Length: 108
Ligand SMILES: [Zn+2]
Image (cartoon, rainbow, N blue to C red; front, side):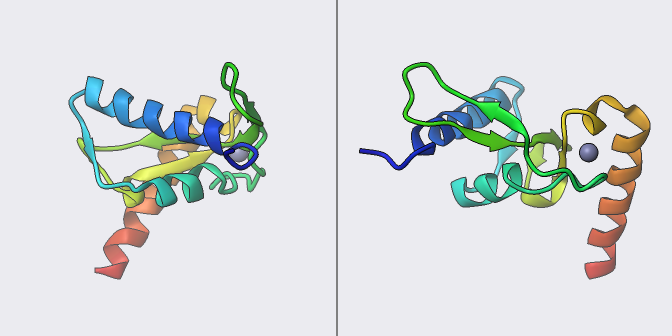
């Protein structure tokens, strides 16, 4: 028996991979990294994950945030975590994207 929410999570990860594949994008994001990302707080307002996700006939549910992905080869550094409100705001998405890119450059 899978842990509560684990089956739902596995399905989310499979969806993430197949969506990228459909759009001819690749990723090095592992299942663990994916889990960490979707369970992170919104990078703009700090909201806890609040989107309840339930698969059909799946065991348990869990809460997640949304991911905004950049580039054709997605890494955990080209993904932004946003809540369902912030992701609708183009300006917020732009601000966070710039901030994130800048902090990655600073690490180089
Ligand atoms: Zn937010």
